[in-house]
Image (cartoon, rainbow, N blue to C red; front, top):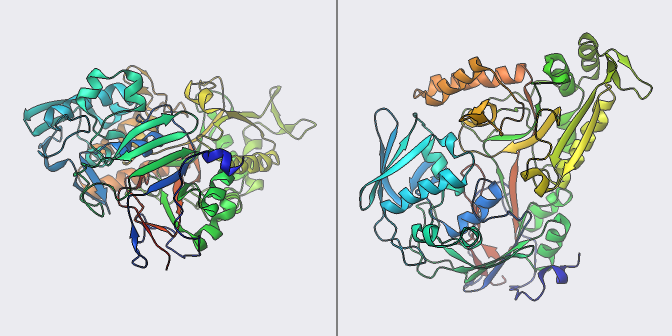
Length: 542
């Protein structure tokens, strides 16, 4: 695709040439830089990958957009919670009531004042619009004063502040929620944040314009007040090579997800931000309800049969680290390093399969038992949940496990197919692959609970159902003693690893490359590295 066709007639700001500028490769906040004169009131062009169906909701790609328009109650900074729309808070002795004191000088961009009733309305909206909201254990909210609000929980949740600082829990105008159509609240919602939606051209991009009255940046922002630039053009560019070309020609000032083959060059010539997401990484989830993976030995054999670390190193070229823990991401405070489990050992994999009764092979070298071949179906979100590099990594696994006699069938799904639930039932697949971004270790509850309310838990792609282990998860997430909590989570991670219910592959990372002419772009530190453009400014050439 030609770059000119991609960006059309959009007015682009190119400030000087693109010169080499070595910057940190893993910091969450952009280097401020002092050389050159600051240039304000311009347009930032950002090339993102995926286009979600709505600006807000439960997918991390929606949180990227939500962060531009909405403020949240609190923010997360270097492991601590800091004020945002809430100035202070306290938790009841039983942990089931959190009381927030709120700012009294914030107004939504439709003129509605921010107050306690706005939080009450948003709590109701979260329950309706975020499918996994129940895992925060929020039940209801009550305004006890004009700028004092209580949030009530069904159980103690030590991570509630972490979760509320996530981009999914931005605060919307209660007036807009009540009076605007569902479609308008999807594509042009109203917040109190640094940007407002001027236009969303589906299939192309979103034009954000500055909220000139913005006065409610979080405590950890670089400045308080309106954005330094007047406009943010957010382009949806699925092809990574096209995004990279746009950055190099100056047609984009920032791009999402640098191609792995350009990782070294990006770190040399541009400012690179890279954030390892919280929750759990990209993992293989074995169907333990039916099929060959109900046998622990077959699950373990699959993990031994592929050199997952070598594949990650070769495919991602240093941009994404290997992660063997399938239960918790390394970002989590209670993470346990299990990367030494299940090293590549083809002999051991074959021995386990023999012991499990898969000793015969057909003419193609695929193992057979009771007339059935050891065929493993793996549907995956191609281009949405799994990048091009991720697809290449899966193909490498497919090739390697075949040597052990496992016939891995990769089934790519479009974003529409994936989100509509195609091939998601236990009868549709033997193996799942994907990540779950979350800011707390109760991700174990989200991904392993058998039920969500009275219905099957759709986030549980292993179809795991073990009341004893689930009780241990519940006990760990309400434990208030940090040492005991860590001990409990360590034991759980070791159990899930030993039993091979899931197997880690690589960390889910969110990276961006920024032109040397743009300073002040930073990622927040709440589980998904959301980009902040409010503090960004251009500089003139040196």
